[in-house]
Image 1 (cartoon, rainbow over the protein chains, first blue to last red):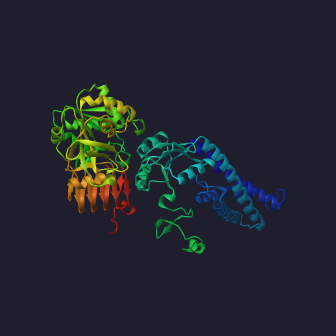
Image 2 (cartoon, rainbow over the protein chains, first blue to last red):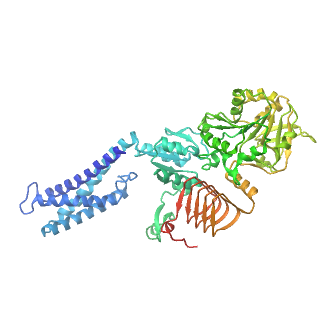
Image 3 (spheres, rainbow over the protein chains, first blue to last red):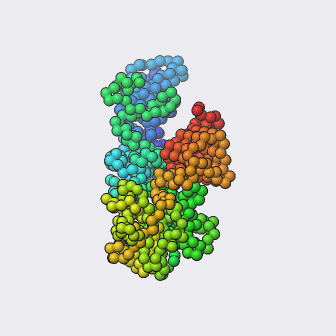
Length: 267
Length: 328
């Protein structure tokens, strides 16, 4: 776990550096490769350094750094863009409140484009480092419940993508014939749950079958401080477009009709 | 004669109730299933309970509570079901280890039998294996057991089939039998090839031309192998009433069917129907139907149907965390 936290700190510090560096680059592209006396670089740099942690907090709030987030995904790109728009707004306000001055609008557009692109590229690169480091010597060790076609697909995908959440053991409520799936051992039935959780130092439990045991698996997760995940196919949801959404304060899993973009957006 | 009770299974179908205790030690209407067997066996017959290393402590405690001097434990060195010897393998090992040369009363620890053991023992003829059988009345259900075909008008077993695909009869073997001392070498050689097949020994005896007799009974019998069988057995023994354990408290509840509230458990403002609550649990403002709740659980403001809940589970509706009641 220390390895993960060290990597996370590097990632966050890298984001701060990227933010400040892309703003500095925007300055030089707009002003030219000189230190202007009318629009001093020192002031510009100082404000970007002050704003960078605030921007980072916005980015953290979007859960972009979550283990399960794919950095290349369109959704993640949207979150990064949103955070950089907020960053530009914070920077403009901070500069104005500090020095009582506005400055080039094109510079802000450059800063937005460069910080968004720079942050996204940095995240994609660091994701590779993170996956390499965490998949080879697993820190986040997943126990998969159920030997089904869905669980096989999940395990193969996690391994192929070198996911930081690494499947290390499988249990099956009914007793499966398979002894391993994609190199992950099938350790037996649910009576081995406690032994496997403790012996394998499980951090994540992914339920892929045995719906009737959800309560007990959740109970074990709560007792051991393990993250519980449920594959929607256990509930019969195979569409892969289910969403957890609030309904008058209740979190419900919603599956919208096929092709119903309008209902998906507004219902 | 020696009695041997097989109690070495891991009972995965009854997980999580059997996570930390053997199935024969599950409480049935107030006492462990295996205790009904032991209390039914005449006092002069020594009893050995065969179990595995994972459940040995539970049986040791139970034996100490029983206070029967000729009740002892044989422990198979297996912590998981993939390392166990098999039920018949365990019998064979015990016979070899303890150099048994006497008749053997063989019982499975997860069966509840309503007949008097004295009657069964009286039906035994020296040197002829005896098996207790029950007419289950349904060929589909019979597929899960050993079936016994009798010679017309006699109690002699013509044919014994273990878990047949197409049962010829609905008379099934019930996990209670007597094997004469002379048949123990056959058991040992058969166990070497089929360590898991307890019922198969009677097929083998018949194959070798050995006469086998049958004790047919109509009293209550339960093979408690699943959640439904466990609840069914509880309903049959408890009936339409509430059983309160020592120190248990039940206030302002609506109960129907068979409800068992274990020692020290507290149940308030709840609706319960066919519920078994193990010791030390707290249930408040819940609706529970056909549930078995293991020990030391805390349930507040939840509705559950047809669930087995593992020991130590906490399920508390957020509204009740602030001390309020849920809307009816």
